[in-house]
Length: 318
Image: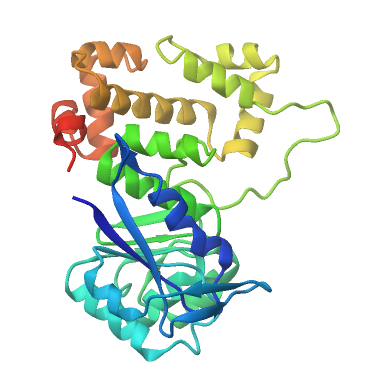
């Protein structure tokens, strides 16, 4: 069954944000079969103004929201003058139990509709003070990339929308499909929602410093090994202190935190795409034992390895 997604543009829309759902969700396929049908709508079909000098031609009106399983509201600078039918439609969708998603300042539209009241949410860091002032009943977290609060999901600005859409694919269809989408759009497999929105310090430059991308790629090829900070630093030919500093600058994560995240993602892929015993999955992903894999997977996905495999292995997918 194909999941129906409506991307709701409120002019003037952030053009970058408006393209993310179609590009990311539209790439989610298994055996050439798409998992999502993505359509774009706006209160008044026709040319939609953006925050640049580009207009987006939209053919569908708000009527397609009634058919959508998920509604995505990209960033907009027009929340104050938005058509009142938008907030009404979002309230109705929330009452029906459909999934609502915002990217960047699209969270302001969810706030105006009242669907974020009492919920944890985030938005683009430049607008968090204004958001908090307007919507004091929302539990705003200005630090994170995205928030998954059950049927309502919100992201920070711009590229964080890609992370959120990859998270949605991963939640709906598993790590293997999400990682294939990430490769298609030339992205890392996906940053965690709790990662910081921005790094205050600039990347190292001018001292011969090199990116740690090669070391990260090497680590991903060797996840079955008991890698340590010393191993990572040795491959990168830097001190552990420099490694830790550069990892934080480039990924927003500590090296061992990144390594654990990568191991769990590898374990998910193996559970989905192979029939290997759980103990062997744990060994190949570098998590050591079946008990260790179980603990980490339950903590991060809410499922045991057996339950995860049953939910996301190829025959089980819708």
